[in-house]
Length: 377
Ligand code: HEC
Ligand code: HEC
Ligand code: HEC
Ligand code: HEC
Ligand code: HEC
Ligand code: HEC
Ligand code: HEC
Ligand code: HEC
Ligand code: HEC
Ligand code: HEC
Image (cartoon, rainbow, N blue to C red):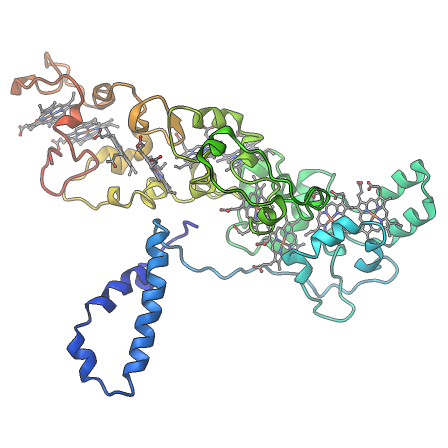
């Protein structure tokens, strides 16, 4: 959602220009050209509100670039094709059929497709299961004859990465905190959500805060199909493991993630980036993507913002302090850096101001100002 922006191409910027084109100019045009211009203008008008409504700066379009390895010829000695699987795994086949992976076509007539793209050759397993005739020990032994994503996390992820490595979003996965701590693709994604097939109408209860806020919920299967095939919706998915972060979002001042108005992945990439804490962008860019007015540049910059970044003064998740400040009393936040050991009443008693209370009573443009070196306005 919050990818790098190429402002030159955004409808948001081109849109006002359409508005301000003086009408007489249009009238002087040859009539043959006018419908064309109008059509373009209408297109812009149609695109404009979408960009405005999204509130964040529009993301650049990035076509998907999954390099599917489809040429592998299926050896008939080991591969049998998806039709055989259907006989015994109807729920998986049914759910899988609704996903993008089922649309991956074969490059050649004899190429591997369907289930065996991920599970590998299935003939040995299918034959052994058929021969097991319900015998528990034999069934269990036959289960071991196919790759079932129960091995080590790296082996699991490598299956997916054999195709997904070429996508920019997933390309850094190997170096992410998640990969390094044994979290694999299938810890977060489900390729055939059979639970949904068993209870089609079911919706998850969700967090108390979300229920209080009444964000509408989709049936689980619909949610899954339109939500990158995630096992659970955010933030429940992330809270499963990051319970300390869940506690932070329960504090009185917080970004409205538990309510469902924002996602963890607005700021983080679950797949890893080269930035601190897997942030989508480096420094304060992640924050400035939504809080655009704090981006500047200002004539008078507050170096605290530009050098230390937003988290010098704010906690990103949640806080007991107003405005997500890292200190309860704002003046002590300022005095962390603005210390004047020689002054009686730091920092500017010499001006004989009463400097109790919040410093931003006077230094109102604390993120940077175009008018005043001391950020007074
Ligand atoms: C003759 C019936 C039959 C056929 C055909 C069959 N399976 Fe299975 N499969 C089973 C049974 C029985 C189990 C074990 C019971 C269970 O866990 O559901 C199983 C288990 C599995 C598992 C889980 C293994 C585990 O360790 O939990 C996977 C993955 C799997 N099958 C994939 C496939 C694929 C892919 C195909 C087609 C290429 C296929 N099966 C064909 C009967 C079959
Ligand atoms: C895109 C990769 C992929 C494809 C294609 C795929 N699976 Fe799976 N399958 C997985 C993963 C990953 C798991 C591990 C459990 C999970 O995450 O849902 C799994 C688990 C299973 C299991 C174990 C029980 C379960 O449901 O969790 C069975 C059975 C199974 N798959 C059958 C199939 C069949 C049949 C097909 C073809 C219709 C198929 N799979 C196609 C990735 C895939
Ligand atoms: C054979 C190559 C291949 C393999 C293996 C593969 N994928 Fe995919 N995957 C694709 C392609 C192609 C698409 C469709 C891309 C598109 O249309 O933009 C896709 C799409 C997806 C999507 C987006 C679905 C959506 O509805 O937007 C997810 C999530 C995904 N794959 C996860 C996985 C996971 C997890 C695994 C491993 C269990 C995996 N893939 C294995 C080729 C593959
Ligand atoms: C920690 C959880 C997590 C792990 C691990 C994870 N993903 Fe994802 N994935 C997500 C979330 C969350 C989204 C949805 C992002 C959004 O909505 O902003 C997503 C989205 C996707 C998409 C859809 C489009 C996109 O690129 O954003 C694909 C494809 C995908 N993941 C593939 C993978 C593959 C392949 C792996 C393993 C190499 C993987 N994921 C590992 C959480 C995870
Ligand atoms: C299966 C458990 C699991 C799930 C689910 C999970 N994580 Fe993680 N995550 C971890 C582990 C383990 C680490 C590494 C240890 C740590 O830093 O806490 C980690 C690390 C991270 C980090 C980096 C911390 C750092 O210091 O670099 C971020 C950010 C993060 N996860 C975000 C998410 C988001 C967002 C989601 C949901 C889309 C998510 N995680 C889902 C287990 C998980
Ligand atoms: C408003 C942006 C934003 C949102 C939304 C957000 N984070 Fe963060 N997160 C950050 C920033 C910035 C840091 C780095 C903090 C620092 O360096 O002091 C961070 C740090 C982290 C860390 C590593 C440091 C730690 O405190 O353990 C994890 C794990 C994490 N976030 C998980 C999550 C999860 C899970 C969610 C969703 C429930 C989430 N974040 C939502 C901005 C955000
Ligand atoms: C996806 C958009 C988005 C991103 C990214 C984002 N914010 Fe916000 N932020 C919001 C929204 C929306 C609100 C208003 C929240 C509300 O009223 O509940 C807000 C409110 C705030 C507030 C005021 C809190 C209050 O009590 O009113 C602060 C401070 C803040 N954000 C700091 C940050 C910082 C620091 C970052 C980067 C780590 C960041 N934001 C990233 C959307 C975002
Ligand atoms: C030097 C400390 C400091 C830094 C660095 C800082 N802020 Fe603030 N911020 C404050 C203070 C203090 C307030 C409360 C202002 C008030 O009470 O009027 C505030 C308030 C806010 C608010 C809510 C009120 C408003 O003005 O909209 C947002 C949003 C915000 N900051 C975002 C950011 C972002 C984004 C960054 C990084 C680009 C950032 N801040 C960096 C000190 C800082
Ligand atoms: C992380 C450290 C840090 C914090 C916290 C901080 N500042 Fe600053 N501030 C600076 C630095 C560094 C400068 C630049 C000093 C210079 O250019 O000599 C600066 C400059 C200023 C200036 C302009 C002074 C000048 O001569 O240019 C004012 C006014 C100011 N800060 C007020 C505040 C207030 C009010 C707060 C609390 C809301 C605050 N600062 C919090 C580091 C900080
Ligand atoms: C009653 C209004 C007021 C309050 C409250 C106030 N300031 Fe100021 N501050 C000013 C004015 C006016 C100036 C400019 C003085 C000048 O032009 O020489 C200033 C100047 C500064 C400067 C620039 C260096 C200097 O001494 O000239 C810093 C740094 C500063 N203030 C920090 C703070 C901090 C930190 C607090 C909170 C503890 C604070 N101020 C509270 C009005 C105020």
